[in-house]
Image (cartoon, rainbow, N blue to C red; front, side, top):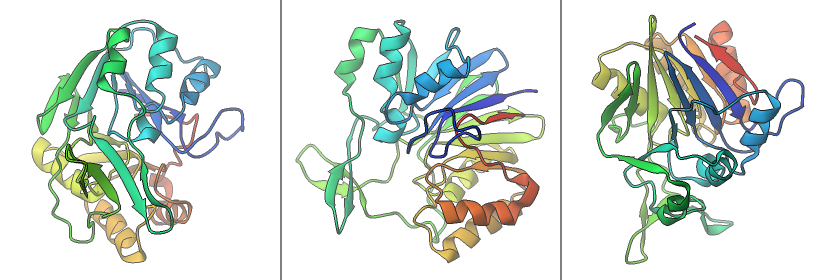
Amino acid sequence: MEWKITTLIENHEDREGCLCAEHGLSLLIEGRDFRMLLDTGQSGAFYKNAKQMGVSFEHLDCVLISHGHYDHAGGLLTFLKEEKKPVKLYVGEGFFSQKYHEKKEKGIRYIGIPFSKEDLAPYGVELCEITEDRKEIHPGVTLFRNFTHTEPFEAWNPGFLIKNEEGKYKEDHFTDEIAVGLDTDDGLVVLAGCSHPGIINMLHTIEKRSGKKIYGVIGGTHLVEADEHRLFKTMEEMKKMGIQLIGVSHCTGEENIRKISDYFGTDFVMNCTGNVIEI
């Protein structure tokens, strides 16, 4: 085993029905003398799950929040209050911008993070805002952001907005969103929070910048709103890339999860709450 990835919370219940599930994501990454918490769900329930699973955050090297949405960052203050010790926090440049979502039937609602930069100060957080397109933070662990948008079938969703300093809304292109690349003997394993820039855009960008084959993809794909064409093109492209581990779930959509599972067969892993993947 090179890496162990434990899903502390996710949209789907654990197989025994003993843990909390919610619309959100939190993963613990362990391996190669390195431990990182990736995302904290929306409520802090991930922390309760961790304790119930016997997972300790002792000797944690850092926390990474993949992007500035409530369902990935909402549990951070719970974690800081409970752990009562300083932590190194990685976020992408633009993480603290005000993020919104617009739907015709619901109007515009705030979906950003439930805290400010100032709220982190009392906890002694060492804040690291990533401005680089690629940054290795530990041997075999690389962060990627600011993804190149090249796939026409992965158009931006105009419903995701940022409010600028003048109070005006503009389309959010998620330059803050970070994906993690883990080196393995078989290639890179990519961990994604929500993949708002498009999962194939992200994978192609990572493959190009790293010069490495991608072996696996774990996390959210934001295919929940994808039509049949986009879903098929996504699966087809992953197959062309030779990806052999597909552990996607959060924000993928129930019907799409079923179709991806059928398409990839034994290469697919239903990465629900409580699941552990060893690579």
